[in-house]
Image 1 (cartoon, rainbow, N blue to C red):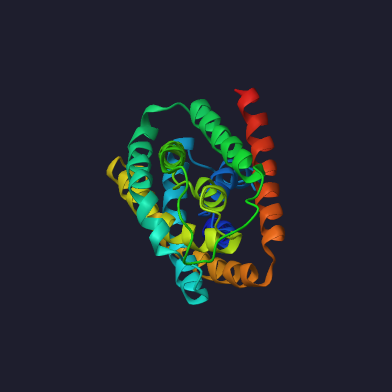
Image 2 (cartoon, one colour):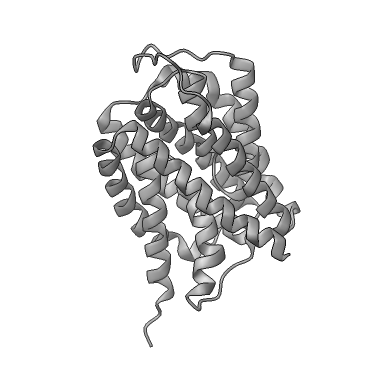
Length: 260
């Protein structure tokens, strides 16, 4: 009998990688609830929440890598901003990656919900009246920005991804970076931090090696399509999509927390 499970993994990875390319959010934030809810809904055996964080780390790394390859061609990446916030992201991501094993499933869901709430709040902050040119953006209030990045990557690192939903609004608000610059720059930052998160998850035995090939297959095509759609959409449209994704995921997780 044909095993449909690899097909399901490929399709979920494709969808998560599509959001990686479209919004720069890593994909892990989508794949986490997908494996938690969609896989058992389709009648397949799912993993524990801790194992799903390892799957999320794997998909995030694959999806963001292919998204970066596409966004590099677009030319919106600001390397100067990356240098100012990368260290806080790396420390936070590693801290979160190795700490997930010590949290219960309910606690991990609460952490996920907190991450969405913080990111949504940042996205809703008033937009800067004037935005900088792609290469001239400067980090304002660096202490506050880096503290938020550390906390955001520590929280998201525990869940298997690298805090892209935190990086995007921070670059947009604290650096006055245009939305498309924020998304493209975030993808490179998240590629670096997700690599660290992935190896942290692998070190504590939370990465399912038997699924990596299927995750890669879905990610390469999904990220490419997402990057193409990103190029076609306006910044306000991208912001609305990002908020909608956060709202839907947040409501579903909230219901799950009350079920425990």
